[in-house]
Image 1 (tube, rainbow, N blue to C red):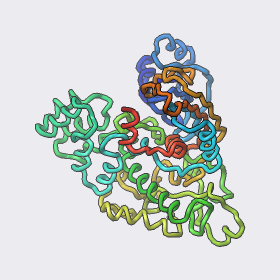
Image 2: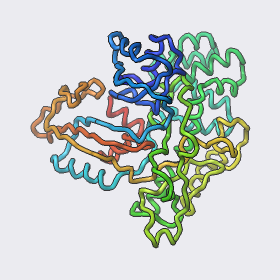
Image 3: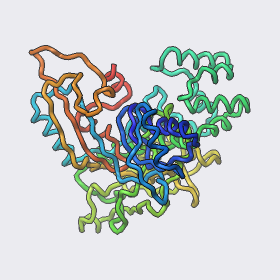
Length: 444
């Protein structure tokens, strides 16, 4: 599947509609971002390749090809990583050598593998705040966070939200909320059927999206723990009490987070078909590094992991463990027990249900492999450094002043393992904030 300026779910909906197929017929290993030109494998149940090939003349911004027949469909997480080619424009540097030094440093040292904006959303109401209300069992508050007016949204959309908040007219709201706002529409349609039942309304949200709210809060805690680990102990190596992947376990490429490539929550899929994930045996086991491990130098920083929290989570055996509970307690959340019994909206599990799609994520040394950079001095903003053109890149005015440093366009090509964000690699390379406000300013 090749697509431009569409997320994976949208592209598959278009193909499914043209073929007269239900979304559940498709299987993917992971979703790809909308604002990119992407390729990925897709499996489709009991459809002849000729039917797919015939669509290419009718599709816009989507192409299909490289067909073959397989015995089993893909499942979420069934990939080793992602290959990226990213062009950075309007790069100001004293020389090309400075950029090369920065790239070399990224290759050598890697970066702390924080969860990026994809996990928290770019709206003024981050998904982890919704997740926190769900974990506290505050169903009405969670519904309000999703439906209420929000800063930064277009006036027309905020007008729809304001009207519903003031008048409570569900029929008008359903008519005016665009279909891309999946969570909002699902809540409203359920509230129309069950007025005042806010838990029922939340359960109407597609499960993959509903789970993402809780996962987002867990990721929020993870990011804080990662910062504490780096700030308190540095990143020079393993310390006693670190969680590490056991060396005798199979390759870590099987561990993945199936939702890592999703965009802002309003673009999430309606299709719970993608909820199928890799079996439990593919998840690596971990241990707490002890003094003997340090003496034998068995592990390196590349083996260090931090858990996404839950009641059955093995936490590090050092002070990093405390940050999870400290922040959660401030938010009125217990990581060891839940005040309600709604399994999809809890952080903990019983012995039959997995905590999340990925129990552990690599802390650091998520090194981009096979990195190459192409420097183009004074490149025009209208010149394409990609075969596909520059339509997905923000346009800016040409500097045009000889008193200023020349602009550089930097083309980066690299491969990251699963559960790694390219935005975090770029953040480390450019030393630029990835906050919502900063990104909006860069695109304005």
